[in-house]
Length: 271
Image 1: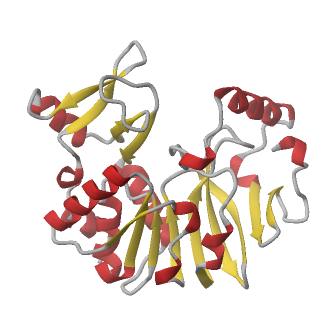
Image 2 (image 1 turned 180 degrees about the vertical axis):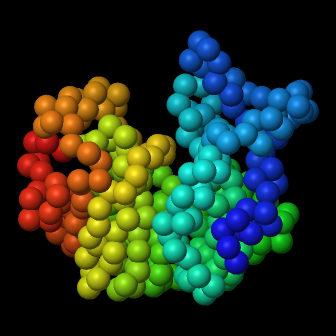
């Protein structure tokens, strides 16, 4: 099945909860309930933007930081293209969110081949309900995605919908040789939060950053705004290299961010 056919078969609307969050001009995000303003809710859901489904890890009146969302359709489509999925491809998704992305992948590879993990119990249960509602029996695991899910390993693809600053090595261990890891990165060396496409071979993952992206961080890898500003200043001081010049190597000993070639690592002080 093509990616467009998967989009046609799995409408985003079926995965968006009745309560979403909309940011106002004053910077705060406020709840928008479907029953209160169905037209505005539907306009948000059918837009080309991400839809926030949780703020501040579950704030109930208003909040600042989005902590769970349904990604913009353009971004979802781009990641599906980069993932190079075929029927039978075994996928581990880190960050279930609404379950929409898992359902799209299941249309392409088959539901039995998709495992998705979500750290927030309430979000995970909501995703299970969404997936059951559309008859998509993918496995939703409640747990810390940094550990992966070894029970169903090895995977052909690990697809991550939360940004990392340190790539957890279990993801590499649980990916077969020849498999791919697609993961957004926190803005630690480039301000655009680059998306990495890594190839796994013999317990190591190597690849380059291929496109700008913006994803919420893994909950255990959040960085402060002050650190973000400092990282950007270092990037500017280094001459503002293009995003695609950077790459990363991950092995059992840790990770190395490099510029242009793997044998040109960035000094630790620059990361």
